[in-house]
Amino acid sequence: MVAPLRVGVLAYPGCFASEVFGVPDLLTMASHLAAPNGTGEPLYDVSILSPRRRVVASGGAVITVVPVRQVDVLVVPGFELYPGLDLDATLTSLRPEIETIRSHAQSGAALVSICVGAFLLADAGLLDGRESTTSWLFADRLADRCPGTDVRAEKLVLTDRGVTTTGAFSAMYDFALGLIREHNGSRVARATARLALVDDARPSQTPYVDRELLPATGSQFSQGVKRWLDQNMGERYDLGLLSAAFHVSTRTLLRRFRAETGQTPLGHLQAERVRKAKHLLETTDRTITAIAADVGYRDPGTFSAIFTRLAGHRPRDYRATFGTQAEPAS
Image 1 (tube, helix red, strand yellow):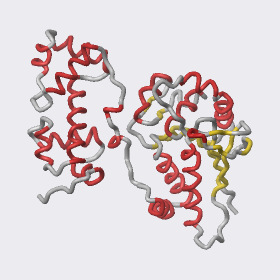
Image 2 (tube, helix red, strand yellow; image 1 turned 180 degrees about the vertical axis):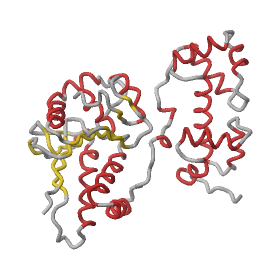
Image 3 (spheres, one colour; image 1 turned 135 degrees about the vertical axis):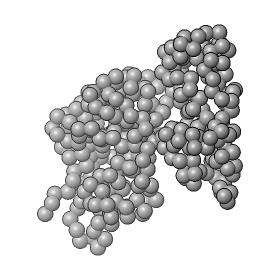
Image 4 (cartoon, helix red, strand yellow; image 1 turned 90 degrees about the vertical axis):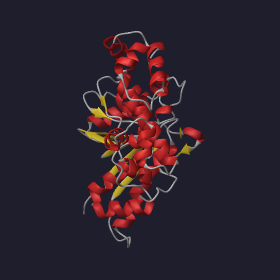
């Protein structure tokens, strides 16, 4: 008899209740699919743990918990990280949970964070020297708070030496399906995904990034450059013309823009062109060639290569996945 995998989910004040129960629910489905007649041994021993006697999750949901015990895998859900939240105070209030995370890591348990649960792992010292991911919206904030980690914002699930971090919210399902695949095989993982209507083939967070939700970067100079580029999006990129518009040399413009934003003017322009192209692919039936021209690309091949690199899908595949309009017959 093989002992069931012990999976603990660490509940704490303010955590997202759905992220507490999402992984256990998918593991329950997998167990039923692996032993459809109910005759098999339990595959997973799942418990909701807390160093506290009572936990009230985000939204006021009261979660029943059991005392902390040793598990093979400890899952740390995310919490409500909103503008104006005092992150230092929030994490200070979660010292009992951070100590629980640290002690489980020392005992050899695998650690998993969901979404911004990565901030708890970072404060426990588990991300230093490791690659990590989190919600694309808060990736820069995690990198600033924990400079010792290499934040890979495009990743949905990233495991580095026993520590797993995931992207935003629904990436908990990508992690759970990976765990099921590892312990029960591809057939059970695939069947679980079909039963739950969960995509089991998502390669990246990149297609879901909405740059309008990201905080603005840069000061007055770079903001002015961005506005100029956005207003001239359909024109050929000309660094000399751009520099002349701001009465600086090309070298000075590149240096100041990168210092303020961390990117080049061309990088910003390409990202904005792709953002506009995404919107057109989602909401119109214009041809891909026409959309490429709309956002400043005369060569559809160049447009397709840049779009695929930044959006994580080819234009046609992006429209098929996210579009609300049927593509016209070619």
